[in-house]
Length: 575
Image (cartoon, rainbow, N blue to C red; front, side, top):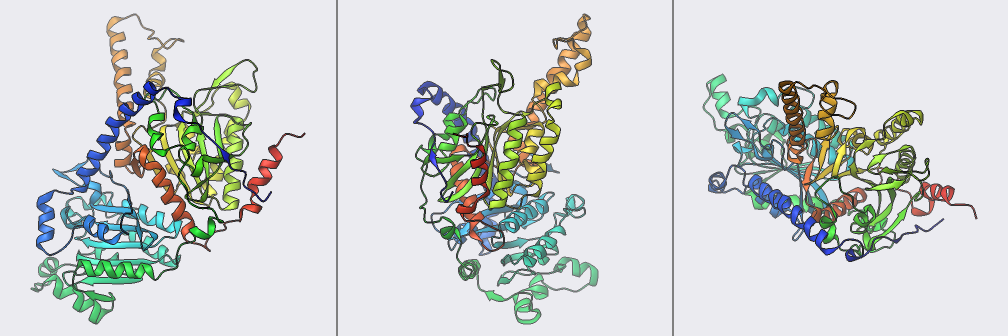
């Protein structure tokens, strides 16, 4: 088959959701998304206006101001890792965003990964988790083969906490290995050095293809204070490693510029020299288009109570171009939707969990809950994932999952084996994969659907996302199982013992519920970014464009010869 049979999906909102329910969902979500906006704004302030003024007094821009000048006008900054170290104190100090801004930024009509030390937070020092955050951004750029731009203004490790960021497999030195791997893969790296660039901060730009230094910048293995202490020499850091040294003498930098604005203009010019992106070619003559069903309605489809369902097809209809979709294996494994849609004119694969109840195909007259992986759905998803990988189609995994089916029948049907097949597939895929946690992300289902441990390029969480092995109440029952009867009621009749068990269960449930807070996951780098539902379509456009921007490093089949056509043909009923 030469044609991808995209068909309309979704309905106008009032055809499936009454206005009162929609408004109730919107209102509940608004409070959470307002909190998200407020927390982002606080992070963006760094250590506050006083430190911004200090930067300006030196004739420099803040890191976020540099990114604003670097990006194409009227394009969004897709920041990742905003909440790394959120809520964590080091002594009495906070490290907003771990002291570094990492973001997908559009520069000269190309997606780039920008890594910028926040010079309003301890002069851009590296805190605990700062190296891991930088490395995560470098890994994303490597997987997508998009250019990396380093905006370096770094005073080195935050020394009071150096033991948490210097050693270890993902310690600060791992950044330079990532620099090297990016270089070996031919990924362009461009560095602007704008101020302090000490020790590890001095090494970070060196492997870059271009290095620009402003007059106030320096790169040194050891700064003036350390040299004074070790060698009793009175020198300034500019004397040791300023642009006069590294541009005119050592060759460790390429171009000397007067100020921040000039450096940013020249970095943009370097990006403009690179080949244009492959997106237009891979659209195969299609035009980018908005969904027919408005993307702005998306958040109102989700009940805030994670136990209540919604229509997965309606979610997809508000994400894919023209609300057109090709579902693969529509009659099998009904607990999931698998299929293809366009985003910004580019083909993307989608896997999303259905919610509610479905007829049990193996027990007529019975129903079973959705949001769970059963045998057919696992097999279907593994086959779809393999085919997308073979065809070079990026995959978006949209999770609202409680886990795998359990029990005697599940084991008899071999769910362990089918689950292992899906996990193997997602572990070995080379096509870009992206994961979105819509609400629940529980148990081994979270793993099987390309959760963070299976290294999607990016994992996003909504403000409703809940990551855990199991829900709080379920875990409390499991933890106190020996104290409960067959109906999960407290077995003892002793009042004091009953009170103790009841309090223990309540405390356990409350702790698990707290652990499922998406901000806690983001603080620990267990998810890459928290986003509002209104931003989700824009993020998918970024993923699609970045996936197809670079070409020649992975196989992208033309749609006439997709493996997916073979799967669809084999699943058609015989006439």
